[in-house]
Amino acid sequence: MKKTVVAAVIGSVVASASAMAAEVYKSDDLSVSVYGNLRARYETTDNGLMGADSTFTGEGTELGLSMTYFMDNNMYVNGDVLKEFNIIPENGDGFDDSEDFLKFGSVAIGGDFGEFRMGRMSAVQDTLAGQYDITWEYGGTANIKSDAAATDRLTNGIQYKIDVNNFTVMAQYHTGQEFDDLKFVGLPDKIEIDQAYAVGAAWNSDFGLGLSGTYTRSERTSRSENGGDKDTSWTLNATYEWQALSLAAMYSDYDFAGDEQTGVGAMARYDFPMGFGLYGVYDYVDYDTQNDKLNQYTIGADYWLTSQVVSYMEYADQDFDKSNAGQDDNAFTIGMRLYF
Image (cartoon, rainbow, N blue to C red):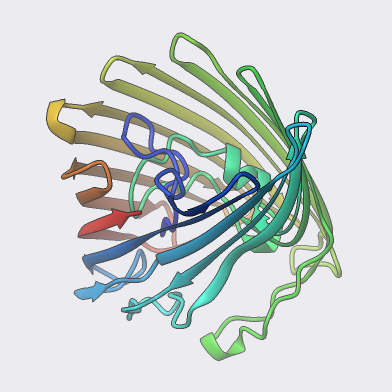
């Protein structure tokens, strides 16, 4: 998994990519903030399937702009844009983004009643699921998600979200997805989404326990090669923090237009004093339709030089029972990120 944002780093200093946004303008009515990150890492793999082999890359570097206009009665209007810059594209795996692209771009109105947002945004599953994946590069295989199933990013989304005490509730409607021609990278054109629906809820206790669940259903414009024209996916997640120890687990179930898959993920992390942490992640995926199974182990260590600069090392090994769903590979990376 190529993580592009730190959505949930359990037990670490940073909770999101915009947590340390720099406010560049402030008045009684308007706040303007800039946020993002710079990335650099070296990667090597055995078979070039989990990434590139023996390459230096800066892909995933991001720059975002957030503007909030404050109104009466605790209401506000927000606009947020995040662009990804692959300043040093990764070569070798055939799936990296060789050009800059708009990752998110949306507008919202919010207040005591919650928030309504529309535009290009993170899907409910991407926002609330997969907290067990605290890796920087390779984990999260059991949290199966993609733009094609409306479980990663939405191009044309409408969202409602509300936070009440320790609860978060989200609902989304996706008006459709248009895909570019993928034949130039040797892939067939994807079947477009006609519309999609998603709901999710999360709860965080005062004693370290967190629970969340998501459900997504999308309708495709035509049937897939497996005979289906609908995608359904649901996830269940649990996290627990006790002093310096963090634990998390996830169960996921998917039916991608007839392609059925089940995933299980688990992690353990321990944070030492002075910003040093060790972690391990296990991913299991049962590709039922393809009669194949994946076991993936990821271990890593990171060190926060400051509250905004992290360095890390990570090793992952993936093993398939057969070669129907994929092929075996292992990968190692060492890198650094600067958040602002």
